Length: 189
Image (tube, rainbow, N blue to C red; front, side, top):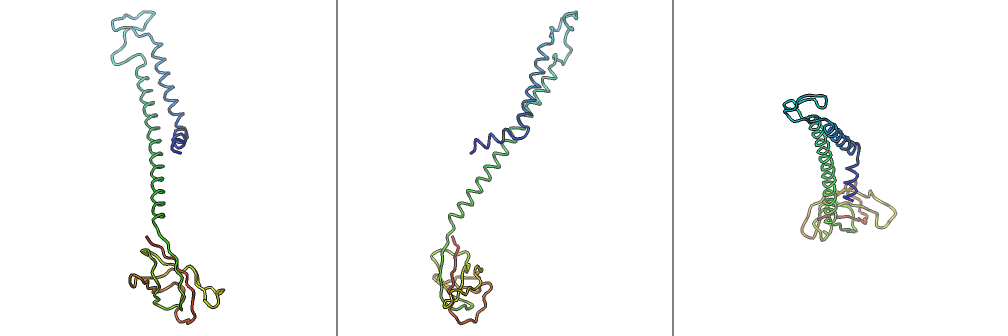
């Protein structure tokens, strides 16, 4: 996958065109300089040459240097864009791996309790360190088709090492003496 990403980044947008245009400009400037007659400093001007070169000039050298600078900037810009894109992809991959590792370390336990709803309500603790408790299903035990607000968050504390004290389940009101079959999901680490 990494090689495909590199190829995609390298060829995205006008990146190759910018580098190719800058390289062509260097070739053009070099060709123009090669076609110029470059006499030595003591040469006299005649019909075959234009005389000695002036101080600080080099028959097309300024245009070559400008073209080389432009090529360097184009290649440098391409390298930075590629590096940034690959760095962003690596960052996203690390984040996804971290999230997957966290999910793999999470533990889930299910508990079923048969009792009337009271506040508080003590239930057996699972063999994990509980971070969240959700009542995913509640039915009247004697009438299993009578559902009571499933999927409710629970306010809880550890009562002791073997017991969790449910202080409240969202949407439930104490007072109904009928036995309820509660299905709890415990999420822990």
